Structure formats: structure tokens, C-alpha cells
Image (tube, rainbow, N blue to C red; front, side):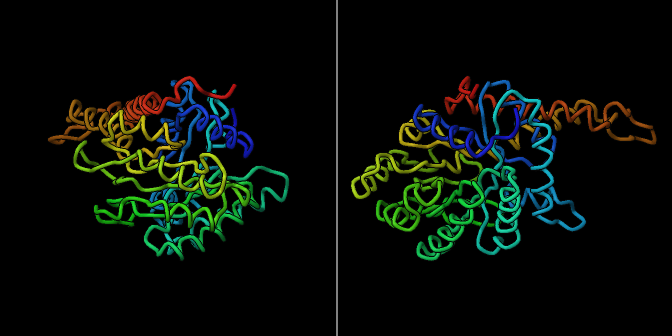
Length: 340
């Protein structure tokens, strides 16, 4: 199937919310990790989301000039071609973009998609994320309102992060403390500034103790039941039932119970990066250890071309990451839910 159209993406999100499941949103940094994500979704018979962070886009742009827009645009164009060979719908998304990178990343990409839409085509990306969690909520929402109008004009969904997620993600870091919990007042101010869908669709990355990176269960206090309070508090004022489509950030190490509670309360997208990075790299390490004197020209020998050929270890890496994606689909209840 081709990359999801705006209409298909909206249907995907609607079905996830109604069915109380979520799509894994898999960060990719290469054509190979893109194929791993697509393969994982296909094997799980789940639609899904592939996303590119600012750091990932810079890497994709090549180390000669490290241009984020070039990197993101190139992989998106590649994805539009290869995704047709996979029997699932996949949306393309850009991950965390702080204020100082908007002009070098999200705004140019929005302009590219708007130009495509004006020519009768679909946007290049289906959604973009504005990460204003390092700003005051007032400034965060003012920028979000501006971006939401531009995104809606390009038939794109906007993701906003209104309060901090702990840990570090592509240079944006927050301490792990009591500020990692979004309040009902925060949610009400968001609904007032952005509406509840009538001004353009947006996904909300609310904080309930989330932390980016690697941590073991118990080291961070997650309170996914908080999402129910946010939904209810805004519904009482706006009259719209379950007004938010939530995103679960910093999910590494979360328990099955925590994920289930988040799904029951409106989470439709859950980001995975740390776990899939490890799943991709682990088979490569195994290959090197098992073929040490083949991948290296030890003691003046010539090595073994078959073992240092990138295809030899690349296939295993793709398989390892794909398997982790299929597990994520099972955890998030999206297995077998693909649109026909």
C-alpha cells in the first residue's frame, strides 16, 4: 500500500482511539531501519507510524553538510516508493523539534507539503511535532497555534508537547521531578489555544511521569490514569467527549499494566526509539563477535569478504529490529488491525 493519505491517516487515528489501541511510532535513521519498521508492521498486520527526529534527519542528510530538511525529505521520498510493496498503511512523522530548530526543519517541511497540496498532491509528511516543552506554556501554545494553522492548510496533523518529558531527546533535556505531570489547567489552556479539532487536528503529548531513554520499571513513577483526568476535565468545559488524542513518550521500560491504562485513556501513538535501536544493533554485535577474524584483517590476513559485506550483518539487524516492532504492535493492541 502507498504511504497513508491525509484521509487514511485520520481514519487510522480514529480507529485506534475507538478501539483503544495505539500505533507504534518507530524512529528511523536510514533506509535500512525504515525497511525494518515497515517489515515489522507488515508481519504484525498492523498499520503504523515512522518518524524522523532532528538528529535522525541530520544524520540522513549526510555528514558532509548535515542538512536536516534534505535528510528528512530524501527518506520520505524513498518511503513513498518502497512502502507500496508492504501490505500496510504507514504515516510519516517528524519527531521532537524545539524552537531553535523550527526554521531549519518543520517550517520548511510544512512549506514543501503545502506546495504539494496546492498542486493537487498529498503532503510529503502526514504529521509534524512541535516540542515546546522547554518554553513557557504561553509561548508554547502561541507557536503551536501558528503551526497548527499551517499544518491544517497542508492537510497535516500537528503533534504538540505541552509539558516536559524527563530525560534527553536530541539535545532537549528535562530533570526527572514533579513537573513531569500535566495538570487539568494545562489541558484547558491547550484546548482554549488550539481548539478541540475544529481548527485542525493535533496529537497531544501530555506528561504523566514519562522519561526518554533507558530506565528499569520502578525507577520512574508513571501515572497514566492522569490522562483520564485531563480528558474529563476538558470535556466538562468544552462539551466534547474525550477531546484529546494522546501520545505516549518515553515508553522504554513501561509495564504492560501502565501501557494498558494509557490505551484506555486515549493514547493513539507510542514512540519507540531506544528499544528498537538496541534491537537493530544487537545482531550486528553478535555477528562481529562470531566472525572476529573475518570482519577484521587480523595478523596480516585478508579477512572474509562475506562477513564484512554490510549485507551479511545488515539482514540480521533488520530482522532484529523488525521483530521488536512486531512485539510493540502486540503490546499496543494494534496487531491485526490494519485497514483493508
